[in-house]
Image (cartoon, rainbow, N blue to C red; front, side, top):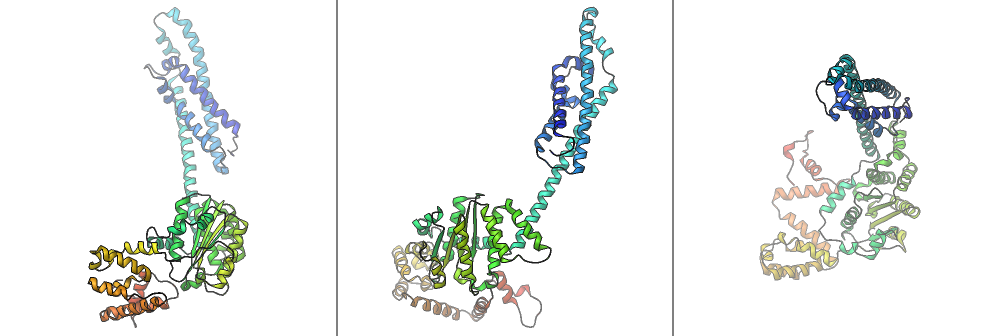
Length: 504
């Protein structure tokens, strides 16, 4: 406690309150006779004067403010209240001394007065105004102490609220990206059980245990790299839960969001995610925020990298996952960022997981490092097909043998769409016989998709083409609501007509 009254003085008040309280309990008969003609219980008597309440609130104060730093105004206020408490306790203690003397006289008088001691007590008891004054003063000081503690609690709540607002402001200032939201969306679309082969691999578990700090997972386009990254992130969260000694940060890169994939923005995104999991470390970033926020400037890359190192040093174990690093196509950014991540893990307890296509400039950085190729395994494909049988024609759904054939053949060709629209068992079998194999499948898939678009009614055909134009030429990935607004735009109109938004 840091107020001017002093710790020793405070302890003296607490001890005096406990002493007076004990004297009340030890001498109930005399004091009951002096206070009232009625018989009061010991506990009620102590409560009546407020001694017990005062003792309790002083104990509360002692628990709440063992190391508390108070303002000068708070210190002065508490000092006045405690001095008043000390004075009223001294007066009450003196009164009890007087009663002790009277009690001795009553003891002598009892023998001579025979059966009339109570009438003698009435003549010797305190004046009612004195008793009332002591009781009122005690209760007043108890109320003042309660009010003081309540004011401090309110200040604490306001400070916590302000700290929360400041913390959120720092997070928003650091980065406006929301990779956790993308993680939730991606993982919700992953087939349950997919990727178990990777989670159970020796390479992955060696990486999890920290024996190998790097794990590189390359794969061809469409192999499911993003899905696997999402599964790994979820596995980390399930393994470690909200452990403050574990940090997990990740990036989902996309060739359509190049403006968001600069070195400084990628670094601030990692900083933001780690800070969200470790709010107690906000002071490390707060100085950077105060330095730049008011000036409307941004930290340099060097400042951000130093902050990331400082923040990482405070957490015993940090996992950083970077998905599709090959889709960061800004000159030199992907390789520079990877080198920074590799340098970061080489000095600290940081584990890095990276996915990419087989690009020489990326794979060369992981030469000799543990690596697992991400691929569409037969088990994952079968699991997907088995869980999507309800989407296939009725003739397949009611024929178990045909379902097994579909799973077997489609697993080889990876093309479920070829069965769309088939209404007979014969048509399904013919389609399975004509399934394309190997690299030819991509051409067939695209031609078939465009063919199905062409077969739509004119209005739906036109809508599908407009959607493709927006999706292909958009500078970044569009949300469904953004696509709806884009499609609702009418040439010559400056205002968006909500009734023109199509259902997608």
